[in-house]
Every structure is written in structure tokens, then in C-alpha cells.
Length: 477
Image (cartoon, rainbow, N blue to C red; front, side):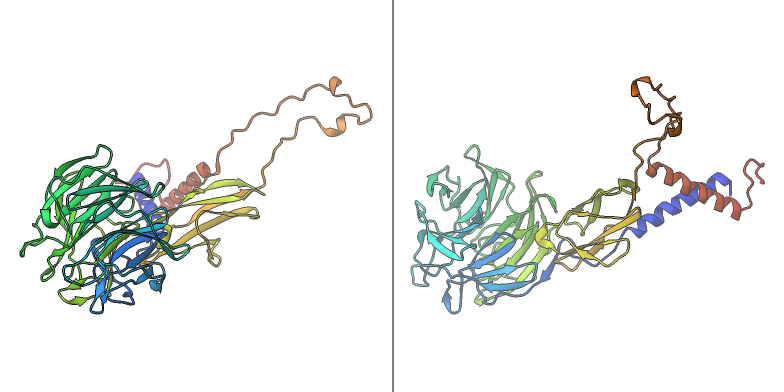
């Protein structure tokens, strides 16, 4: 092998080794898969689900005991449930729920099993900070099987042949353009300024533009509507990813009717106006609640004919990447002046609510916990290294790889060619002192440019010595 080929091979091996050292492989939460979590304290279906500050609130619903006023909070980080203030003043099921500015809004209710089922256009608001409920302006019209979506600072309630927008700041309602085809018990999700009304009794994809107050049609879900045994149907539940941690898509799950539920998981691409199938629900059911935190879906409760479930399943959407953590600053071989703080800036591809533990190790010492970006202070002179570690709520752990930097005592001035003793102290006069001849300038090279050349020189020397190659000698064929 030629000398140049040996050098090239050595460099490739060195780079590959360094890359491998910086990668930590772990069994995490893979895309398009499900995990089972701690169940709710109370099994139920027909509940409202909403999120505030990374927590999931499961409100109301029904089971064999009747209609419920329960309010239970799930913490995804600790995988635990806490009982909160119940619905007031009455039990509630089959209502539309949405969150905005730290509060949860529950629109409409069916408070009893009495036939014919009574519905009411109520507007009950829950504040998790104070753990209290209050009544606000009721909906202008009773809507059965409605859905609610938050867009901007307003909440849109759609159902039947009505579209209303609620403004919490003014506690007022405004009527908007109704759906072209009336619909109930459908899946609903907001993406940017549009609200997608999917399936249900209409079997269609109807798209509402909140800016223009107009409706258009998209490609209908792969399987039909609510009546009979058609696959998708009513009791669908929908929610969307944000595009931050997984591609921006709408996920539509469940379906069927009250006697024959389905385990569908259908994925809609708003850009391509097309559908694909995801991994089905782990349990065949419908009338469950669904929440999204950090582009991860949580399916809560539900029913299969007469059996109500307390189950909680977590789903990683298609394209949901593995946990990543990296150090943005400092970069390798960066130099800092002694006495200055060294700021550590991090990148983690998870929201804070999904990070169970974040820590760092300085110079191989014991790990210390941090909440995010941090600073290293009072570092002594010398070469240092820092590594960051992260563990998410799915049990996946990874490290950033080691970043090396230096802390040095910088020299701020150069000695002159004039000896201090040549200037009489007693008669010193700056105006009469000739300017010393400037010392020849010495080019300064950053440390990070020197280290790679030094490493390359050592590598070439080792290879040359091991193969007894004399630089400049003719190559032996």
C-alpha cells in the first residue's frame, strides 16, 4: 500500500472512531409504536381531555355507574394521576373540550341517561392554578356531538350545521359560516389557521379556514361514515402534530359505532392531501379522549360496547426521531480567558415536559443536574472537557459526546526592545523619550487550527514508522 493511501485510511479510521465514541445507542420510544402507561383511577368513556403546562386533564365521562363529574390529572413525567376539583355544577359527558392560556373550556353537556338524552349549551371553565370551576357565557345554540379547536387566542366550536367562535377575553360568541354538510361525532384537528372536520356522520373531509371564514373539501378518510358498519365512522377522535418533533400530520383514531368500535389509526398529510395507515390502537374501542404533548399522543379511556376502560396508551407518530442532545457552545478546542465564565448552550430535541433528567460531567467528574443551558465558573487554567446526558420519560438515555476547551491566562502586552533601566527614573519625560522600535509581528493561530495539524503529524509518523517508510525515498513496488 502506498504511503498516501495509508495516511488516508488512517484519517478515515480516526474520524469514524471519534464519531462512534460520541454516539450512545439506547432502546427508546420508536416511531409508530405504542406504550401502555399507568391507568386512570376511574374507567370511563365519553370524557373530555385537554392539556395545560404538560399535564393531561381527564374530565367527566360515563361508565356503568352513570355520568360522572370526575376531574383527574395525569403527569407524563412521573406517570402518575392526581384527583382534582370535580365538574361543577353537574356531571357531564359528550362535550367539547379545549385549552387556552392555561385554562380548560368544556362546551355543552349531556348530564343524564334519561331518554331522550338532554343536551345543554353550557360553558364551564377550569383553572388548574386555583383548582376551581366557573360558568361563562353559554353557547348560542345547543350542539350535539360538537368538537372544539384552539386557533390563536380563540376557540372554535363546530358541530351539526353550526360554527361558533368563542373569545375568552370578552366572554362572547360569534356565529360563522356553517359546515356545508352538517356533521356530528367527527374527528377534528387544527393545523395552522385551518380546522379539519373529518368523518363522522358526513363521511367527508371538510376544511374550515379561520382567516377567510370559508369551507373547502379535502380527500375523505379511507373508510366511510357513522351509520351501519362502515369502517371509520362516528366516534372518531383526531389531533395533530406540530411539525417540531415529528412531521406535521393529523392522526384520526377509533371509529365505528356504539355497538361495533374500531381500532383505526389513520394519518392525513395536509400538504399532500393524502392518507396512510399507522399502527392500530392496542385495544379496539372508541369514545376515548386524546391529547398531544411534544408531538406524542396520549389515548385515555374509551369503551367497547359496554366495557369502559381506564387505560392510557402513548403513541409515537411516524417520523418521531430518537432522543438527541448536543452541545452547541463551546465548540471543540475553543479557548477562554482565565476568570471568565464558560457558558454551555444545549440542543435537546424534546420539550422540557418529556425530559426526565438532564445532567453534565466536567472533566469526567460526578454528574450534576441542570434544567437547561448553564455556565461553568471559576475554572482553573488548563484543558477541560464537558459531556451532557439526557434521559426522557420514555426511558431513552443518550450523551452529547465530549467537548474539549481550554482556559488560559492571556498576555495583554508585549515587552519592548527598550530596557527599563536605560531610562533614568528621576528625569523621565514621556515627551523626550523616543518611541521604541516595534517588535516584529508574530502571526497568531487559534488553538483549534494547531491541534489537528499536530495530531495529523503524529499519525503520519506512527504509520511511517510501522511500515518503515522513508519520506522522500522511492516507493518499492
